[in-house]
Image (cartoon, rainbow, N blue to C red; front, side, top):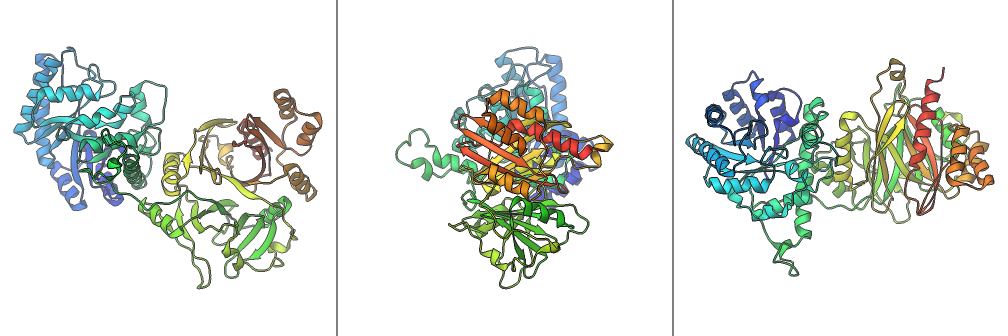
Length: 631
């Protein structure tokens, strides 16, 4: 599959955008007219630079509001078109995007439209240019790709075809199956974009909220499957209008964009293999059939089986050690060659990393996941443009396959074992080697890592969703917005099908007030699941644990909502436990105080409860905000 991207997707100058696209590995680019108009580079300079970078110049766009106009305006439009055709000759480009008219169209007559577009096609032919006509979703008279294709058939000119844009098709819920009936020689170009499902006017939706494939909710694999079945062989190019992407680092965004096309190519191949074409039902022909466009696939990996460990990096570890000990974790000693500690409670393992942590407050630095084959999983992630993380090891130590997530969290792919043990724990010394001279319990209870909550930078949130979807096979769940004293917090759950791995990505609101900038209000946390939370909370309290203090008003509201047994309600309030219930079961949990930017949560899931206590999240946010801003 030939990959491309429109320069409008990226921040920076035209030169910077072209360099970033080449670094990311794109085959070609679409030049958005404004990028050229505002560039000091001449068309000849751009042509030379593209050749030096190994980039094709695949499409010049956009040419707007041509058809269904009065004779005088048609004459002006043809003059404007000829100027662009001459410019394209200097650039060495042969395809232009012409959008259906949204502004100056005054006559709703397909015969007239076809006549005027024929004049455009003949003029384009004289200059060796192909016209790709696109139905904009908000076109005044033409907003349906099938309508646009009927015009292509009426024009019937070798230099006139259509452009299929996934956003304009899927935002209007047009059926994509008829794409297969189009003449592939008349599909001149294909553009793809994803988007979240929003209830708003389609123009605003398009101009501000498009995202790269895999970061939204469109059925892009199905769209591409129909395009491939049609016999299309040209570029598959990204056209994404997004306010965040156009403010983010250009090279990083280009890599994210390329990752999305690699992911889409794989998903499209899967869709084709799993969806039998008409006439091939029951004989497996669809999965064996070869199409003119070859779709590459990635090394296949299963979803992770569970968390192997969580790592917190810190300079001063005393507070972390005390907190873990109060929760009931056992100190397993220091690593024999590294300045690292291991703490365990059952199968829940927490590493405290003191390496290269000078003057740094405690923060989540890395996560380990159990996978079938770490080497294959790492190879897949690297093909998806994930940066490799390497750690120094001695000859007799476990070698972890590591990659870096968009928020810089290090992700390590570990060899899982059926009994949940980890061979690398043997590299840690005796429990008597306690850090900081503190006393720690040796008999820890049973627990597993239930979920991890990571705060995401606003400019990399969508990138993170795609990263964990494509590299780790986690499935995004419907996102939620949680109120907090500083605004709404967008929360996106990523998890495996069985819930063994649950990762919660939080996009916190920007904090502008100077008083807020002095603190990191939106922390990250690790949650541990236990069988008996009440017992665990009592034991932690006896060890001196400082709980997050829940207001009495919460428990009055809880009683009103659930009519709980008075004794049970009193226990919840006594221990600062939070509670939720749904049709599937119950959820109990409590939070610790924050150390640096990290706090811990302990949970108990009863029945088949599968959530996270979402109604309690505003309470947690408010209490943490108050504790951080208290004089």
